[in-house]
Length: 218
Ligand code: E4P
Image (cartoon, rainbow, N blue to C red; front, side, top):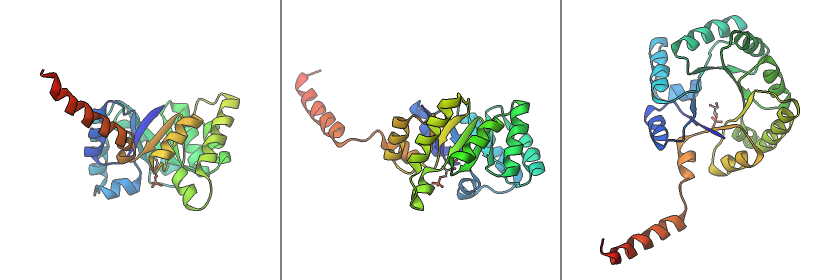
C-alpha cells in the first residue's frame, strides 16, 4: 500500500519523507492556496520544490476545464519534473485529456471521483490513478468506504492497471479501513499518517522500560 501526503506544505512533506514511508504527494488548488502560493512561476517552482523532496508521484492539478486547456496545462506541468502526475478532474473533457496523456505515456490522477461509473471511465481512458473522495461522500451521508470496496472488486474483475488512490481520508480509521479493503494508495494529511504512531500502551510500556533500564547500571 502506498502512502501519499495530501498537502502543499513543504515542512509537512519533509517530515513524512524523513519518516521513510512516503510514496508521494497530492496537491489541489485549495491546498496550494492554503500555503499562499500565487502566480504561475511561483506555483511551478513550488511543485519543483516538492519533487526535490520526495522520490516520486507528485500530483499537480490542471486549472483549466476544457480539453484544450487541460492538455496545454498538463503538458507544461509534466515538464517540471518526471515525478509529476497530472491531476485531472472527472469531466467529459477530463476523460478525453486522460486518454491523450495516457497515449503519450504521461501519468494522470483522475480527481473528484464519487461513483464507480466515473472510476471505470477514467480507468478505461488510461488513468494511472483514480481518486475516490471518501470523506466528502461521508459528509453528505453516503458511505465513502463502500465506494472503495466496490472499486477494488471491479478493478480486480478486469485487471485494470489503474491504481485506486483513496482520497479525502480524514482520520486513521479511514486509512485502516482502506488497507483492509485493499486500496492501492491512500492520500491524507500528515497528522493522519503520524496518528498511526500513537498508542497509550506504547507510551506507558516505554516509560516502564526506561524506568527499569536505570536499574541495569549500563
Ligand atoms: C485528493 O487528491 C484531494 O486533494 C483531497 O484528498 C481532498 O480532501 P478533502 O475532502 O479533505 O479536502
